[in-house]
Image (cartoon, rainbow, N blue to C red; front, side, top):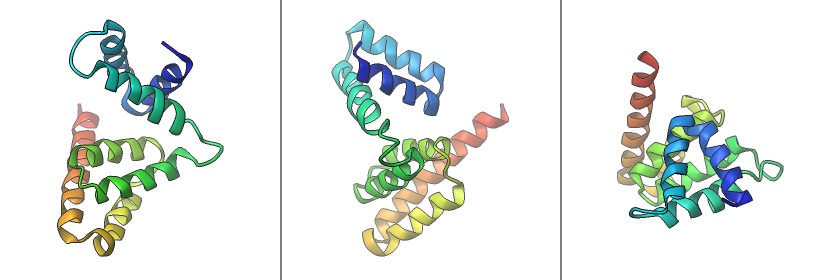
Length: 132
């Protein structure tokens, strides 16, 4: 794999853990299956080139921005993943709740309710994993 993939997979592993990172690496290196290029490009571009620009914007702050964008896009699963990523990048649950509150007047109640459900699902996932 190329340098951007390696930088991206490192960030991905820091956020989602070595098991998920290895699974993604195996999927891309295997070169088979639906969405292999999308997985590769995700590591190379957003994770390898954008999330590694920490001198320009801390990953914590980037998580705030991305969560806001995902709320605006009504992307339940991405909000769920980026809630987990935000926590791994140093956000608190209270700060994530403030992103939700900020979305209310700008995105509307229905969209913010979708975000709230996704964020609560992410918190539940993490709490259940921590209890094991």
